[in-house]
Image (cartoon, rainbow, N blue to C red):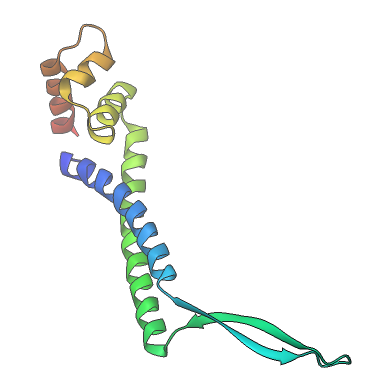
Length: 139
């Protein structure tokens, strides 16, 4: 695992959220129409009434395009989900201290100074960064 994959993890998480929003947006893209018609009851007394009708207007081409776009987005979401799961599985195997450092630095996007403050034990930004770099070189 390297730094690039950890940064990709953040992008993958954001991509999943954005993709889900995009799919919802595509589904809302359908155009709905409403109209009123006049008619009467089929039984006696035959009184005139007004009826509201509604539905979506969608051509076969629109439906095909929407299905294609949704399929592509779903495939991209799967790739991002696989990356996310891979990083999370790797995180379970490393020491808790390093998990905290990685979570603060990459997942929460904190500076090295902020990470050092959260780590406590008189850590400095430089010492935490060096600890991270050594760990990544070894693994």
